[in-house]
Image (cartoon, rainbow, N blue to C red; front, side):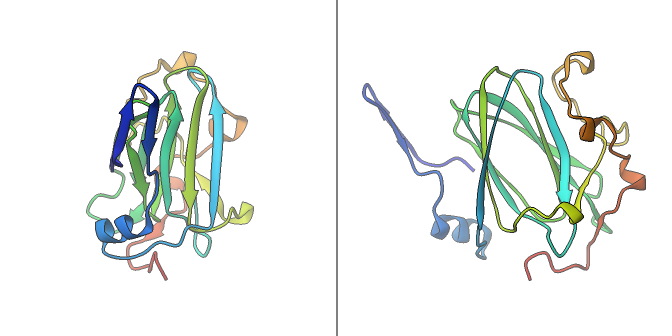
Length: 177
């Protein structure tokens, strides 16, 4: 999604979120309950994270400053796209946003220093339901655009399991109950 952007010599104005536009785009409403923001340096990789039901989350993500490669992986067992991913560059220049639905793992790698990443979620953080998948799982085939030796990872993100061993969603779950 790319919001409308208005800029001139004074600066710019952009609506970063409108419930009615999101509803029109999706055909249903999502009730966001929390906004999150992180600042990171080049090469920081965060992910691939998700929360299991009943705390699963939809995320609407964007970059305020800098640039990332943002990745969502379908982890809904039984889905025709299970294990496949999408990746998109989000930046302060392109103003793009990505909606990451429940049932998808999410991660991003920072491509510019001092990048500020923001996202809305429709469920609160739940440590007991927090899960992750190895960012470098060969079965996923994700090109993170940064040499693996130059990545900056948390301990948590260096110890995640491969997708074939991870707890995942089932396609029959109602993600928006």
